[in-house]
Length: 637
Picture 1 (tube, rainbow, N blue to C red):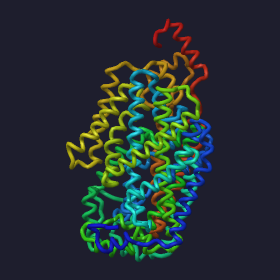
Picture 2 (picture 1 turned 180 degrees about the horizontal axis):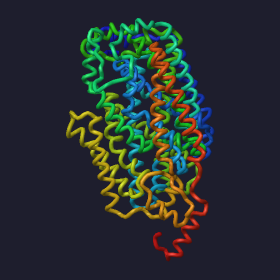
Picture 3 (picture 1 turned 30 degrees about the vertical axis):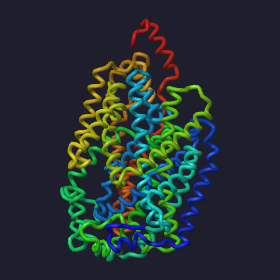
Picture 4 (picture 1 turned 135 degrees about the vertical axis):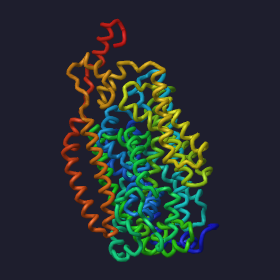
């Protein structure tokens, strides 16, 4: 295979040979995962609920491990290694771009609200909020389209990532696209056949493998590298998460080209960057999960309380092993790969950190285990993604509008066909795009940019109706597609505020230009989900029928728990980085913060889950609504 434009040292790394032992471990694990997925797939053919949600029978801790496995993707791991290498401990804030602390919002209250809806998909949830009006149907369609387009985008993203990864680590002379087709097709076998149950069971196995490899690499790094070696390889300020207005890192004399990379990233004014990602991250998190595998995991739990516990457990099981791996690879690269990076000129390829460490440093056997784990991470993420697509096509289009009375096995068969079709379409887009970065920017800016406003207001403002939701989604997504074309030099992060404003205007104009949703729909949603926010007019109408009904008083407590939870999450991330880099003072501080915030969350959040998750829609709601309508001669309440 030819690699034009790369240095001799980089080409040598790319053409490395994996030992027979490591290759055997890798292929053996891949085969085992597929066989297990197919074996457990018999549980999936019973019904739609069994196929898409595992029959709501899976325990919360298993769903939590599964969700964690789906977040352990190859491309993200390589990016996080680069971020830690360049920015040091301050890199713990870079993932807020997505944002990673959305898990805290879900943990504290949003997953409880979502699970109380008792639906199968995010699009089906629209009926819970907006009823069956014209606006609700438009909103339903917009969510389905958003979900399906995002599935295609993520398949293309996985296509480019796994293809490039396999081309480096497999010994056969195949192109990245051919590797992608082979690996993604094999993974799709059990995901298509087994649905959610198969995906969760295999993800559980995959996470165990990857976590074992990750912790082993972290321990290996501690034993291989001394604090003095680390200190010689990093600039002042690298080993502290604290920052001021400026980033405060100067790589001059160590790896001069890193300064150029920092300038290209635009993170030199780190204080501004921090405020911006916090601002947009809070809004995106308050909107709730997008209609993808994250939402499916929440809806698959047994109860609202289990939904909250599942999202807490994701943080517990994911962060420590993942950052043991990231920290281990980064520290080994700082000590042993820095000379090679210096020889790469002004634009070193930081993506070569991972393959270099694997080839040059890790022992035989551990290489196979790590590669198996990284491929497992890809399989988890990809299988979860394609499992979401048929839920929207079959449940929200075919069953809703075409054939609502078909037998369950018809829906399951159509789900299998739909998954195959989306995999093929994703492959086609994977061939068309040029790079992982191209797909990533499109997903983050064009899709997520227009999602926030409508999905924030749907929870917290009673007057948002189906038309307002629809026009907020349409205007926001349109703005996020037009803005990068009109202003190509505008960074994606700075494009968020104008896109948000356009989307909010679409929501407000669309809502006030049309009538509100019916009181029955709004009262049912308010009593069933029990959100806090701007719901006072609906509360007054609810109290006419149920004078004893009390609004959700927990806004202050929930916001305090979110703030404590974010600090808790940051401390959890800091601990493994400090452990592997042997910064023991920082480790002690992070451990103390983790312990303190855990105690606060135990008393302020965990002990109140029963109260927050209790059912609040009275069983006689329909009867009282009907009686009230009869008394008022059919008039709206």
